[in-house]
Length: 179
Image (cartoon, rainbow, N blue to C red; front, side, top):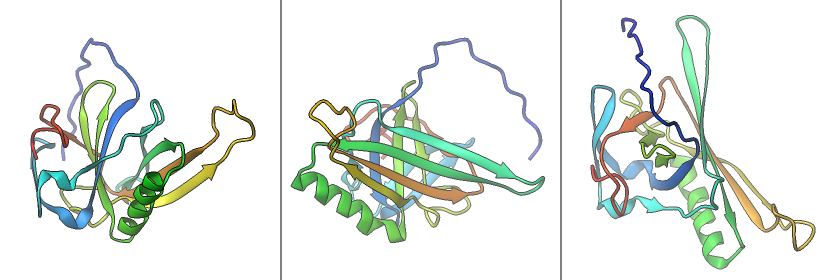
């Protein structure tokens, strides 16, 4: 690949993320990629195979940590979020993530700029290097006003040789309208 310049766009940049959808990697059928951007996703079932996760506000973070040695570059993709107020439904959701973890998951995230990202999938590896559960930490807190109390912090990670893929499309009920 030849070097490609970058032209900065003068516009507002907002950090953070607002929405998360997860799907088992095995349910991804075809991902269409054009000009290094995802333009379509089909699943083995219906778009409802993507499960929305309503996480605690301002706790959803996506990171990419790249390390390399000249001709070899890899990225650790991580998604971390909090779920509050323990319940049977919350426990069921976390157990489902743990059950899907051995075979991997793929995520769609919407960032603070309204852009969507596909994480746990690449054009080369497909979904074989999906996200896996690497952290599930709960704390009850120490007092009724403990802001970090009664929270479960979930961390998903994958490693690949590629950065996360941007997705074209507009918001839909189950994710971008490319599904």
